[in-house]
Image (cartoon, helix red, strand yellow):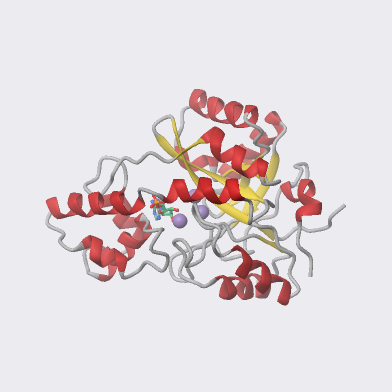
Length: 286
Ligand code: AMP
Ligand code: MN
Ligand code: MN
Ligand code: MN
């Protein structure tokens, strides 16, 4: 049995929409007392080997990770994969397909912003992108702030980048069943990320969880930087009700933007089964 409590199994590097390199994140996690770490870039596992090497060099156990964008019931749902084989061809192909279309979507986003008088957003956002395959709303948000259009990143999302707003573009992401299958077939465990963020009705949330389980999904995030304390209580009950493994992660993106730092969040309630107990043999140990 593992005696890990401070696991942080959700964060982002420059390989997707974070601002730090995988090595700097590993250092920060270790300095903050993280006992088991996973880097979970959006739709991309190009940073996994670097994160793994950096973690092991620091004496910190590591699980591979990824956060996959999925379309479900007209919204974007995020599925975190943990402990998979990061060289698995099916996983690599699935993620590459998921990333495809981001460039075109970004051009449409810029066209939407141009219609409300904001010129040059595509070129602007590109200046913030490290991985050309992964231009994200976050990169637009950073440019819009630095170019003086908004005061901060949350304001950009409220005014421009969420459903119904000028820079929002409907996009078709992966299917729930496919994302879960890629993770499973690569020997990993699939986890529903930050369930409180979707704003689903109880009926749609029930459909998400039961379909996820039917496809072989096994976990749900309970304690995350994207949840309030009340959300954590609520999803503790959900995890118990559905027999799901519980995950914990900061969703850290950046020292200046993220309010929850790596490893600095509440512990999982003791009555839940942590997802990492099901991943013992998938943990890379120093
Ligand atoms: P994308 O994958 O391009 O749709 O971008 C989604 C990313 O935008 C998320 O992973 C978050 O990092 C960020 N994001 C989404 N909603 C918000 C929000 N309301 N405030 C700040 N960042 C957000
Ligand atoms: Mn993000
Ligand atoms: Mn997410
Ligand atoms: Mn995330």
